[in-house]
Length: 239
Image 1: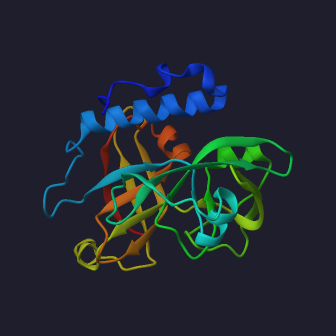
Image 2: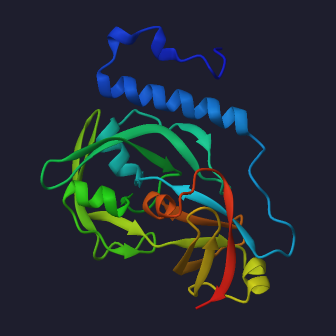
């Protein structure tokens, strides 16, 4: 077994395309950093109004049927690493997403477990590049979602309604919600401190007693506040 810092691509560079090589390097560096920082995620003091922040990059959720169409009937859905929320994980599988203007973004990660709907979560920057106009909605709200084509190793699938920009949201338990004076479906305000201190409004509250407390911002919001590492937001109250 190679050490976290040893990149497998150094052994067989000639056998990979440029895109595959870049994806492999990024994956190896990411895994090495995860090992280095394991156990160092900030934890708020009990009773505080600080909420751990997670930055959500573009990603894909698929049904089992769509996964088979893209990867083949006999391909197993494999976990690469666990995510912050219990039971959720980054898979070993990526896809290329293609917009109506034939602009594409390669190596978009599929997250697990497999779901009952197909969804691509993007930032506004991604959407502009692809030439689509997805709605800002809660995950799973696909009535007005934008179309994309997904391309995998075994084929491609056109999805008429799949692309969204996920609402800013906070995962929390019902006990967390009681402590903060909110309930599922409410909206709140939070503050990010730092050189580009920013207040975010219209942050959706989502509750589930299996979740860990965490706010999700997409990469556009994170860049606007100059977020460079694991940090907290300050809960400012219900809107």
